[in-house]
Length: 250
Image (cartoon, rainbow, N blue to C red):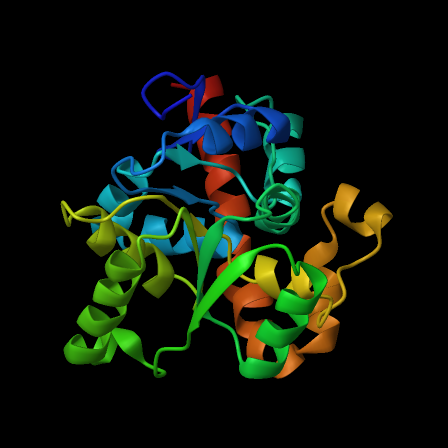
């Protein structure tokens, strides 16, 4: 189920793949060994707000093998506004489910601090992890960016998880995909690895189902996330309302 064949639901100018988590896992595991590198993106409200503000980033998401909506809140609002709404597949859910199937596979992890990575490796001992932690501010250091890209290519891993924040992780995956020697699947799943390691606890299931997982994250780190969740991301909800009005009153 590549992006060209997966059912597509457009929302706010982004073509989301309307598939189940099981179907995604099945498709990723079925890719032939040594297949040309491709990657999965999981846009949440923060990503979408950035794409609305910086449309030049859209080709990175358009080239992805799968583009999956990672925001239950956006889905709830879109559904209430009677807009076409894709299924939600949180990056954390995808990460956890995929890792459970990767025993014996070579898996590269880009990012994560050492304690979190060791916790991840301990939780999934059957996975053959390769860890690389690039320097901060990768987008402002072309040499370090290219070195990280080349590390991913040289490892020839079946799967590569990018855990270095957005948009740098998507830009790095896009750069890797442009190199003919690159193989495997890249996963741009944000903090999914931190949750999978057990080092960071997720919100209770009822909060996730209600689209309130962001509230727990805000409470945990208000200084870093207040600007994102309370200032930038509400713009996406406004954009949904404007889209609904335009469809109702063209």
